Image (cartoon, rainbow over all chains, first blue to last red; front, side):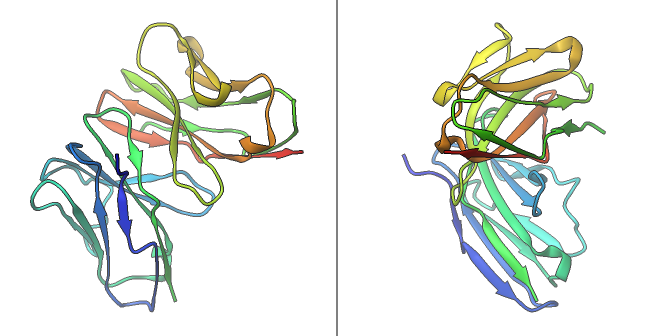
Length: 112
Length: 112
């Protein structure tokens, strides 16, 4: 069984530039999560989808971050414009219900 | 707001030593509890989980954790660590089947 796929694995951009991350969850998993992980800290939830509906986006900084999961399968997280403080690892996870999450490898973003 | 605390940020042990990593969480209703592990260069993987029943749960690779409701704790244990257990360990709590919170992680370094 294929795991959660994320791309790109690494991204370096200059501040004020846009950036997008892509995630393909495990087949059949209805729930998809985007997390932010800063160095030395645990993952912090940005947004959770149940199928195509964003059921929890309370921690998503909506002035610059956006996400979509149009067909209830893969998802894109976008930052526009990026700031220096956005440098972190962005993790995607999926689960069948609100149960065990399976994580992807993450995208390490560096904003210069 | 709910929170998850891991008080040991960095633990160094020799092989064959016993391990106990602390995890405490704030009160917030129904909880499901998880330990995830991240080996160097790899993504987060589930180590074990507690939903109900026997408060002593066993996971992969000889790990176990005990849910003590009165202490709001879910400590991770292993009787004898190996060099291959070197990794970062994250405690996570699902509150009311709705929201996940992760601890800040404990880095375990096992000396051969």
